[in-house]
Structure formats: C-alpha cells, structure tokens
Length: 418
Image (tube, rainbow, N blue to C red; front, side):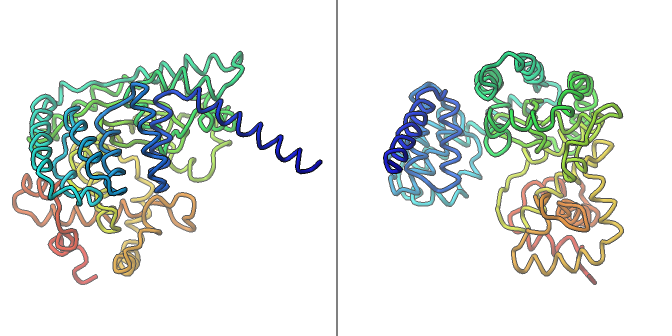
C-alpha cells in the first residue's frame, strides 16, 4: 500500500511538473536556462535556451550565453553559430568577448576574427547613438505596471502566475534583465510582497514620484560627459523588485530597484530584516545609484578576482562622487573612515588569499560592522590613484580601463606605509 501511495504521488508530481513546463512562457524558459547555466547544468541550459528561442524570445545576451555553454560542451560549431547570431543582433563588447575564457577554444577558428570585427563595429555604432547625456531614455513604465498588477492581487486565483504573466512577461527589457538572480520569479516576488505587505503598501506614493529625479540625473551625466567624453549613456529603467537589490547594469541599460529608494517617515519597515533596514534609502539618493551603475556600464573589465571586484565597486562610487551629491553607501563610509587603519591591514591579508568574503555582498553574514566594506576600500584606492594623477581626465580613462589591478593599487600609493 505504501509503495502504491508513493507511486501515485510521484505520478501526480510528474504531471504537475509537466503541466507547469507546458505553460511556461518563452521568457521563463530563458530564466530557467540562466539558472541551469549558473549551476553548470549545461545540457539543461542548452535545451531551455532553445525552448526560449523557439518561442520567439531571443536577444544577443541570450545567444551569447548559449554560445558559451556550447563551447563548454565542446560543440564549437554550434557555439560559433550562436555567437554569429548574437553579433548579428547587436553584441557589442569586443573586450569582454575576447577575454571570455569559455570561448577560448573558438579563437583558432577562421570565423572568430570575423565575429570580433562585427562586434567591434556594433560597439562603435552603439557609441555614436548613445554618446549624448540628453538622449537616453528614462523609463518608469515598469513601476506603473507593478502597481497595476498589485491591485489585481485580491481577486487573483494564482498570485504567482499573475506576477509572471502581467508584470514580468509584459515588462520592459530592463525589468526582464533584472529577473535572474534578483527578482527570480513571480512566486518569489509574491512571497516577498506577502511577507513585507505593510512595506509594499506604504511605498506606492514614493515610487510613483521617481520621474521627478530625472533632471538631477541628466545634470550629473552632463558633468560626467565633460570628464569622460567617450562615455556611453544607456537607457535607465526603474522597476520594483523583491527589496533585495538597489541596481545593476545589463545588456540593455541600467536597472534600478526603486523600492530600495522609497523610504520616508510614513513607510513601515518593521517587517524588513536588519540588512534591508540598513540599505533602504530615501528617493533623493536615486541619482547616486543611477550614476554608480552608469560607471559599471563604462568599465571595461569584469574579473571575478577579489581585488578586481572591490575596485570595480569602489571605482563606481568614486567616479559618481565627482558628479553627484549624496552617496547611497554612506553608512559604509562613515564606518570605514573611523576604522581605516585596521581595515587596510585586514584587506591586505585577504587580498593575498583572493578572499572577498568579508568585503562584498556579505549582507547576510556581516557581524559588528557594515556589510560591503569593499566599496569603501575600492573607493579609497581609486581616490588615491586619481589624486596622484596630474592629468585628471586621463586618470578617469585609466580607472575605467584597468588591465593590471595589482599595478593599479601600487600606482595609487594607497598602502604605502600601510
């Protein structure tokens, strides 16, 4: 009897899983592929990417990921085909393409040089059309879409599916680029909204005023243009997520989690955890996060090494400080300046071990000090380099195009004398 019951439940689970898969949107297949890819389940990732493509959901980022997965599976023919399609759809970072270790097996193929040439042309064309700080799109439609969906929750038979179909599937490319590793899914988003119901109910007014910061953002970007004439100005998308991420840069532009910048005296935060309470900011700091993410969009490096990651974040904060008032990471800096001497010593030890555990993305484990102190250390290293430079414009170019991070630290002189 027990065995029969187990078999019945197994069959029911299989049927429900198949039903769920049959009703997945192409966008969901793409997200599922990204998850499988992150887990190094490459056969599943390939199958899921193909499901997304067959359903009509495709972009150069998806095809680039597919090319990397095919290459890791030693299928150079399909990898090159996917990469060619990615280039045809607008893949535009030649430096990242050439430094992508997953694609190293393709370098000897005659098609490789042609692909690099196309990507380089795409990069040049993008720069021509995105070199004006007055020309980028400031997109807040996802905020309106969020609240339209939110208002349908009381009558929704399946709230998670409502979020999938009415918000995530219908959102801008900015919102859809924010799903993997951030919003994750309609189910997870709904879970967070229900567990933080008072917080979400309280932030509507502030999020709907996001468009009011646009003039400050454009003023800051015009200042940056004067410092770095080669700057690109991507579109900026303001979305509402699961109160876990303030912003990021994607292939399609900059994306800001507006709920992180929705604090005011009348917004209840008692449902939030300690880390969330420490990072929730007021709307006036929105320009700070936008400019920070803009700097990431300019940076021509993306190494997972500890030192590179710290400098990447700190450099974005430092360059933002040159053109905009306010710092969304101020609590980190308040602590950092007081404890700088001891932080230097610990940083040098961890740098030798290539260990970023205590410096970045440690909101769930930081004890006795703020999380993400690597932002402060990267800021101070970058600031020291900039202050030493006689040609400030060239220093900005250098900061955005670092090839040797150890040499950059040495040239900054930040640790001289410890």
